Amino acid sequence: MNKNILEDCTLCPRECHANRTLGQIGMCREAAKVVVARAALHMWEEPCISGEKGSGTVFFSGCSLGCVYCQNQKIAKGLAGRKITTERLSDIFLELQEKGANNINLVTPSHYVPQIIEALITAKRKGLYLPIVYNTSGYEKVETIKLLSGYVDVYLPDLKYKSGEISKRYSNAPDYFNYASEAILEMVNQVGEPDFNEEGIMTKGVIVRHLTLPGYLMDSKDILEYLYDTFGDKIYISIMNQYTPLSQVKAYTEINRKVTPQEYEELVDYALYLGVENGFIQEGETAAESFIPEFNEEGV
Image (cartoon, helix red, strand yellow):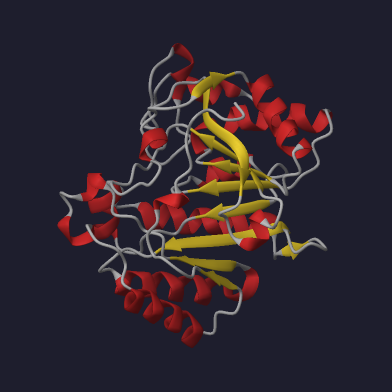
């Protein structure tokens, strides 16, 4: 994989043109060196991702989207993590495999795609055989997703917003839906319909996540309708209620609260009304900081 793209970086829709190879910081808040904040078995993903043994999750530092309500803000802003080589990254993949992980789960990986591909090539030469999960905000360029063809087995993108007004307010990305919808279409075309192993772990396919925001039920319904009308049962839809109003959203008073059970139940009922069968819902407390792991460089 040619890493020259990092000399004039246009990997994500921000297209900031930073020369990350010279140490310039892109809109993702990272230069060319891979920074990882945590690499460990993770039990809090969808059942077909985590299973009973856990997902081998690698949390990369930096993010090109930067939502104001981000639960992982410490790493999204590049404030945690250790710089590593691509050789070390390949070893991390193999170490997670040895620990019994169901897959290798790449969290917020978009700005490191060339380095990840290089690490995957090395790890596969050394015996990596697990499915590769690409866990993303959805704010992706089709051209970048195409680079991953043959390397990624399961795509796990968000589809956060339909409205450009809402995506501008909370992610400074009025073009979010245009990019995310095109990227998800490429993902589905690339890996095809879902497939699972004998343990019920997804080995191929697309799961689109939607995090319900308080007060934006209509936008959430628009997203579910779009996804089901466009893809039907070719994808799984994960309707998430774990929105956590952390301290940084106090200035955004309209979302400085939890999602009510009534809001979430209405959205789930709407999914059933649409005919969604391939889906996941969350039960229990709608907001819990237990969903936020410690970014203490474990496994790095």
